[in-house]
Length: 148
Image 1 (cartoon, rainbow, N blue to C red):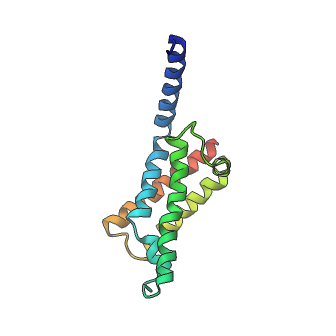
Image 2: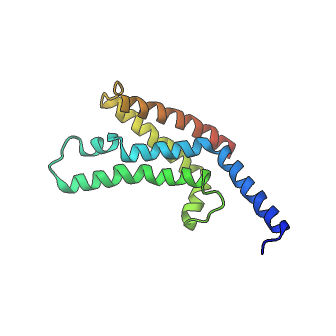
Image 3: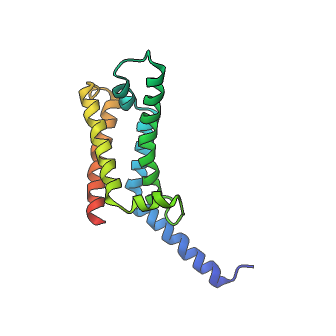
């Protein structure tokens, strides 16, 4: 049986978690954007294969990198927004506490922006989404890093 004190404490914790999520909505949206880059956008895949789709090993490596690298950073963004208070892998937790993780995310976004512009895809809807999303998330992450 739950006492009113225990209910009050759990209610305060859930309100704190909810306010933490609302405070970090840009990180949540950034995680969703990185999932979009991993699942839908083929910028990284096209850059790694460079049009050479005959080599199956290269296609496997390109697919793994193009999906895995953005997802690695997306998980960090989700951890800092939705999964506040949840324990994950210890070393990943320690990595999220360092500015190097966030700087690496900004570098990945800059590379994706550069590749979209280099491939001439900035005039397509997917290219516009990739460039605008990468630039705005990078700006937010710079502000986020300065507050750390």
